[in-house]
Length: 390
Image (spheres, rainbow, N blue to C red):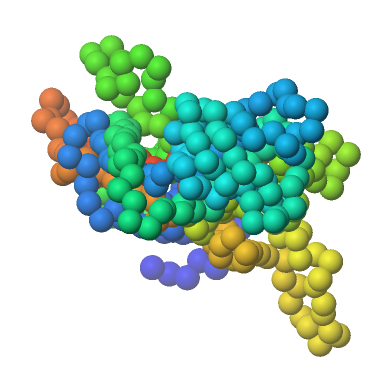
């Protein structure tokens, strides 16, 4: 071919010899990361039924509260007091009211009515009030005494349900045969995209999912869904300005502050042996946690990097990895003991591709997986809610 001297700007649609300049890399901006699932890792075992159960137990409680609204004129001289749960006490127990220095000694138990020696061992007596915490220090048995009546706790079976996640894939014969930009196999590409979506939805469901109120096991008309973490926490639900959780820094008292976070972690620690090791937050509360170190940052003139990030939060009540997940509601903070959490597939039902019979000039298939959340000892975890979300 002879030289023409043409330039690219004189070419175009009328000169098809100019090849299109299209990158063979496809950009995806939609969020599909799963930071909480990545942090928890794969479960050590699979569920064996659509109703997944586990067993929980607890030690005999060593605390109770006083359930008495009327006292004698001099409460310190009252020796007969009513507890909320008299069965937790035995004759010979030493009991401390609240965080005082007084020790009371139990001499008789009749139902919920306890007879005490107040100011036992010459300890200073305190004024008793309704609802005051009573802590059992321990029991003193008589030398050579008979064995006391056996006491025990009942193990409880907890459960959750598996949820089926599916996505269909379909590619026409023409599309599969055509040469496409950035994709060598259209069917494989569609599988990857749908799998990303299913993993994204699994993490979202693990956090926020709710089982149906009726027929949670599912039926021909009821879809089976799992309870997520937020739904499963019932005991340790905290809110600034309530339940002993101090107010935050703003006028409304709904800001997440270090005081609020520490108070919530302390409450969990006080009534369980859990070690909170994971704090899961959305973007708003992650910025609040980053702000904990704002007043203590220091830089020199030689520093060229500004760091405003808290990845690990260490307190007296746990060393916690701070996990940023966009699926946590903006006004919530999850306090988790990750050793008690597993996201597990039903046996043989982890995410997989199943080819479907062809009914024409197309290749069809189904991506399917069935998973559940095992959330042991819900009182070992905590939830701070109703926080400022902006």
